[in-house]
Length: 253
Image (cartoon, rainbow, N blue to C red; front, side, top):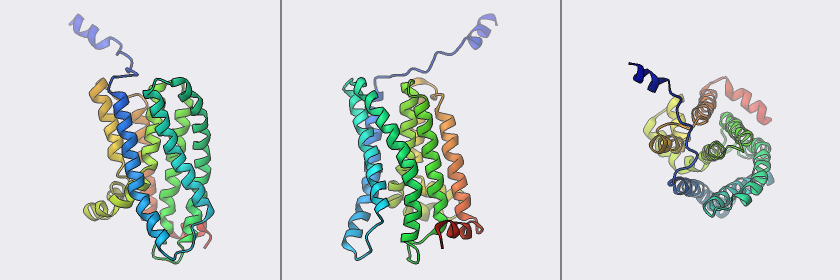
């Protein structure tokens, strides 16, 4: 009994910051993010170029530049880690945090501009502003936490990856959202499954740590709770009848 009690009371070993498979795992995730974003946005961009629709607002181009700049920086950072150039990785990190802060500002401006752009067309969906604003809050919280924990590499890179996975939903939803919505049906929770399909990759990150470390990283569960809480709030607002009139006023109509 004494030995059993000693084993149970013994402090757990700290989360292993590195495993040999980490470099390949995070590289695969970066490639999956690119797949989701390009697969979702490129067909839409090409369709818009072939149409006679009015030009997109300037702020959308700024948003696209910031978004793809973020992905390019993420890819570069992953490559620098694989090349053991952590010195350059740290130098670029400060630019990444500045870009993340800019995205938090540009995101809402773009959301309102595009809502006004689509006003009166079949694409108009004022209630969707709840999704867009909650997405910004999720991203800002995760990137802010990543900055605060920048001296803890294992926490920092997981938070950055979770933040990027969440905003990549905008790409995945463009080609997976329709089929998933048809399969899952209507309602607050099915809607979350339909438009946040990258949540499967978020679950995959936790599963990877469980397999390789036999535990979740300490930042993982709080981050997931943060993500799911605002995803749930966004879906509740989107489906609430009283939200649409508020959203219309927020948009300026």
